[in-house]
Image (cartoon, rainbow, N blue to C red):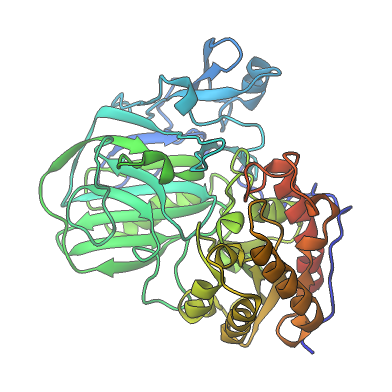
Length: 492
């Protein structure tokens, strides 16, 4: 026996906020380094000499636009709230604080990232690039400046302060130029860009893996004559291949301009972006990163006692969410203990794939620096059932996965909720697997969350599903409410 049952508690409220050290009340400006910034975007004031507005918003109800000024540190959220009223706000323009005039712009209302009251991290407001690839509720949110900056590909440094909605699957943060159609991966030599991708740059040779968490983090992406460097909260690794020489003009945020752009657009909340037309030294990079991390007191492993790795398919990735509020992020925001967390959910992923990759992707994230390491399986298996895999095959894959995580990682298992279009045979396999898991979970896991027992999930309803597979905001809240007590119990 590995644990005690922790079933579904649908009455637990998600209301508290994770306790992180409060950021400085006064502005923390970018430091003076060997080169001036080529472009600076921030929901916080990052350049002391800048006196212009923070951003321009457009009200959805009547298309009226208004500039929002900075307060003492952040953009004036009270002014934004008053202008928003009962409507919602889209980002019309994000002003460049460098003085170079390279403002991010989005004139098309349906493509404007959101300026939401909910998108705040330890007092720092953010801009929500809340795209969605779903057939129902598809959204493509992005901004661009096509006139600049002009960046030399063989000597540049850029920094992102953002909170990804998921850590592992394709998540396009930015690109240079803004309209490129082949975005740069970390190991490519053409173009300049940063992409959250299944293999590169995040799956490094380091142990534990350097994978972006789903709360604010600072990413570094530098190119120079000795190669390329990726950094996450000051931890770095290098690729020896130097970037190709030449310049690129313009900067885009949040969009993949490929054949099916909405399938790969970014899903993240961003607080700041800064780029330099120079390969900054390591010392200079650390100074910039320290200033960015102070904007919202970025949660690093040293500040958290526990680490959670969420894993699963598109349901865990968060497809169907509203305002980037996925159920894993809802869980984190509802627990007062600061938790370092990654979300390894991948759209279309099967339990079979998860089992085959568990050592490389999940066990490798174990970090002895944390008091607790928890793995949360988000009811995976629906894609296996769609492929007509049987309950016996699901059971075998679950056993492989559970036995493949690190010996000191604590596992939270979960039953598989309904898919509306499953055949009778597929649904019978699902029911049989869930029945087996309820009887045998304690041999393999520390906790079981019985998602399939949530009354609201007994039959398909548009009150909780956004399409035949995925859950809307109300459904995401029910998932988070179900997982919270299991996680709290393991935290102790």
